Amino acid sequence: MPNHPQPTTLYKYLRFDDKILNSLAQNLVRYTDPKKFNDPIDCDPSIEVDSDKNSLEDLCALMLQELGKPYRITIARGNIIPVGTAHDHEYQVYKSDFKPHGPPALDYYTWSLAKVIKECLMKIMRHYGVLSLARDWNCPLMWSHYADQHQGICVAYNIETTAPGKDDLMRKVEYNRPPSVKTSDLFRWITDKTQENEISLVVPLFFVKAPHWAYENEWRTIRWVTDDHIPDSSPRVTQFQGTIKEILFGVRCPPEVQAKIVVEMKSKGVSFYKVRRVENSFELKRGIFATE
Image (cartoon, rainbow, N blue to C red):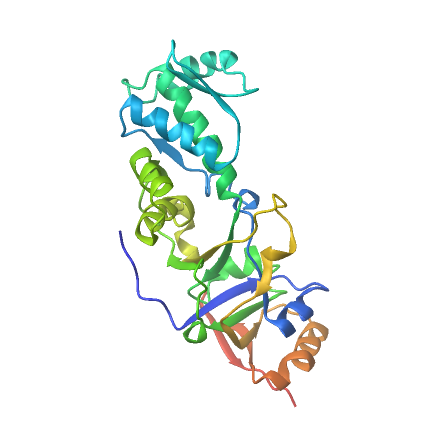
């Protein structure tokens, strides 16, 4: 799988609010719960069944054990069903929504196992946080979508100074591969949690997006943020290892916002730039922002 050279600079587009000054001053970033992304398909992988039925049952039991969730095995039927989970009503879902479009060999029992595996996987994924960064500062769509229609800012981080923790992984988002996880990769990861097996698993989970998002040219850092089942707890907000080297003000960024940020960040060796349009063009340029 591609592993692109890490850039020396990455950018974060931001809307200005009362919390931004404190976040900038302390170099704080948020590792977002992947289920809160604006695209519900993002970080919502399909389960690709490439294991036999016995291996699939073993994987299902291991995934449930990983969550500490009780389970029962009805040997006569060969079923593994989480306690308190009703699957009977889902047969119609399988028959009407999945069977006409899914692989012909995937019978209802196998589909049910894969569904439980995905439910467990989605719960595990919520323990990860995702920091989204951009490769470029001059994308008009990014300014419009993430920086309050140019009223916000774009922060440049010096990634050369980044020393990721043992649980951090930074990679470029891929826009040309399906969002699916193989059950064989899941089994390898859950039985042998080496870095190689984890990367094989997390890339299709967190580093794959639809081709329509390619304009973002996104890089992501993921980390395991909490074990306490509180998705919005403080470990999701933490100090970033990459230092702030530049702050760019959007075309419509108000003078009072610019002044507040300069006062707060000038002593930290940060350079400031004002973004403007290139005449007779849709491109953007930046010029040095006078702080005196």
